[in-house]
Length: 194
Image (cartoon, rainbow, N blue to C red; front, side, top):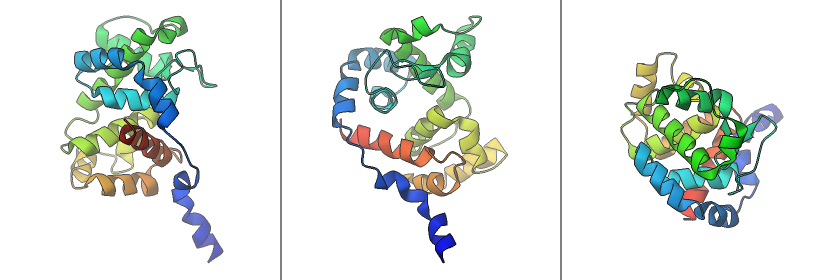
């Protein structure tokens, strides 16, 4: 019985309070840039702002232990490289570039667009798409899709059978990254606080 209870601790993200008010207020100061980048890339400026709130609390100079940089905590070697390739440029952004709020938010918005039009293309429900984007932004689209099926088309088909709550429960129970449910929960708390 104890083992079963310990195995059900997947809801620990709810046990750790997180007040979105201050991080959202700090992230909202970047809203003009988020709106411009969101418009340029076809991405919700509110989602961009929520990611800024959760990732950096609105601090453009944050660098994580894994070398994620700036407002949207962009990793130059992964998301940055993908965006550079999408733009037809060689290499990847520098840390200095990623500490620039306009560049950071533009790269983050471009990366969300890459996810939406690439591996997540075909998700029909806009709320599920938003949540899939958030989880994929933090933990990779491949990990999310593989939690449904090793075949991308089958994974998208299964996702399209879920409403937002069922998608969230799937992330809680099946996503390989333990932090994925908490991250999604925080993104949605930030969105609700706007």
